Image (cartoon, each protein chain N blue to C red):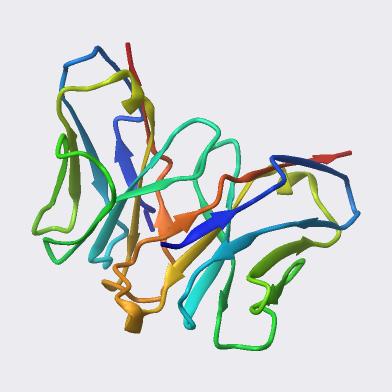
Length: 114
Length: 118
C-alpha cells in the first residue's frame, strides 16, 4: 500500500512568490495535518483537516492556507513568500479526526526561498 | 501552553550498546499522550513508541522502551542493542487527550541526533 505522498519533493521560489504543496493521504485516512520543519528544529503544527473541514490551526500568519478535497487529498498554500518560509513541509495522515491512532508522515516537500 | 524539551542535541553510541535519550515536557493536563518519533536521513518520520499518561506501565516495543515519570514530567527513550539503522534524529512529542480539546496537534521537541558507530 502506498504511504503518504507529497509533491513536489524539492522546489525553489523567490521572495513574494506563491507556492502550492500537495499531499495524498494513505488510502482510508480521512485526516490530514501539515507541519513546518525548519532545519535543525522539530516540526511545528500548521493545520489539521478532517472530512474537508479545518479542525486545528497553529500559530502561522494568514499567508498560510490549506484545504482538503473530497478524495481527502490536501493542498497547502503559502502566499507572499519570505526567506523564513524556507523549510521542510511535512504532511501526515491518520484514520480519524482526533483519534490516538498512529500519525503517518510523508517524506516532505523541501522549500527554499531565495 | 504545552512545551517539550530535548536537552541533548547530539548523542553517539557504539553498535550493540544501550543509549538513553531524554525528554521533559510541561503541561497542566492530567491526561495526554507522549510519543517518540524517528526521522532517518531519508526524512520520513516514523513512530517508535507511544505512551498514554494514564497508564502506569512503561511502553515497550522490541529494543525500544520508555521511562515515563509523570510527576517529574519526564519521558526518556532507551534503545537497547543499538543498530546502525537506528542512526537518525529522534523527536519527543506531546498530544492532548481527546477530552482536553485535542485537535490532533502534536507538539514536538527540538530533536536529538543519534549516531550509532560501528
